[in-house]
Length: 494
Image 1 (tube, helix red, strand yellow):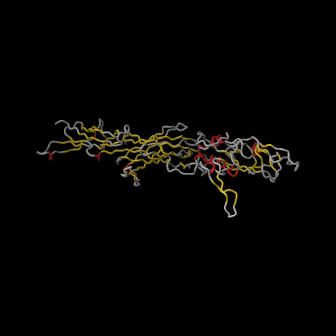
Image 2 (tube, rainbow, N blue to C red):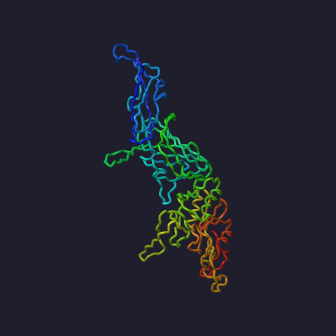
Image 3 (cartoon, one colour):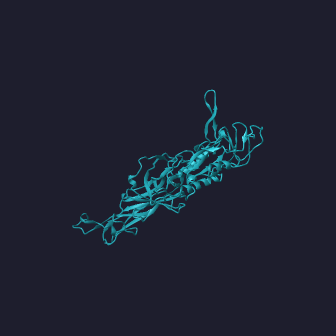
């Protein structure tokens, strides 16, 4: 008798007419050799298991456990032929559908995690549920949001994955994610995980309906993948974005299928942040210029956004200083960064005890908002930054910021010979060459012990001492009334 050849016709499934997509299959192969019958009749024929090393499946030998992993085209018919080398009479093959496991998964979402990770809020204050989310059917990215890691003492990135499961079995598969875009430091990251998807199927099944109202059930599986190396230690970095190609591999790593691509911005700070205001723009100002290895380097990189008097949000929207009148200015970081106008209580109280409301000018702020913005951005990298107030001398009400025009006054008092000054072109504010006023009762700036300098983010100027700042930025003070002088020696910073 000639050696037997067993065949199984396998329909791989998938979308009809969609070519080029593959699924991962695990074929459980086995065989029995037939000996000579002890007596007439086939029922007395002895049968012995065939060593898997003698089996040939699709031209290859399965593993010692009889498993053979293959990547096959979706929506196709495959003829699986199993032969037993050196065996005369036998029966072999994956003979039932239970002996063929199919893995067809699409990444649904990824949430970046790890001991060194921090949540980054969008500028509207919202906290995203995912760092990247994909369409289950098409694999198209629907949303992507940033995450922050700190690099002090390294740290490992983790990715909590959720897969949309079209088909899966109970054999272990290897999940591998490789970043296709390196960071500024030239660092590529590979993520690894091994899971039994059969034991990770979510019990939270959400019904979905075709137009015919026939129910279809979505099923999800979860896995956690860990990076193969630590974040480069003690260095600011920015993956813009971290692009990861996810694949499912057989345990022997000989075959794989694509499972989707995720993208999300990843910021890396120098040290753990010492501010809770981790808005996206704040973190962007801190980390989007990578390479800093010291606090003073990080400060310089962040300050470069302000020193050009053209600071913007992470997506390029200009932040303006005193474009509107005082009542319409945002006074803190959340309001300044909000992508929509905010409404706050005004300063007029009505007879019934209620207050008026004022809708603020979008992305337009006063000195306190800009000082807070710089302070928070520096503190993302663990850099010391404290708010300082510039105040007029005792007995004075306001001081003038350069430039203003003084005209002779009333001749008294003799020490204040000028009228209230009128604004002229001078120091530009952020994205505004002519701030709506140059006369102030106080002004808020920043002092950092990282380099012992004063920083005025509203105007983009810095100074090495109090006197240097005062003399370079200010032009005069009043006497508490309408009389002015150009001597600013009494102005102080506290």
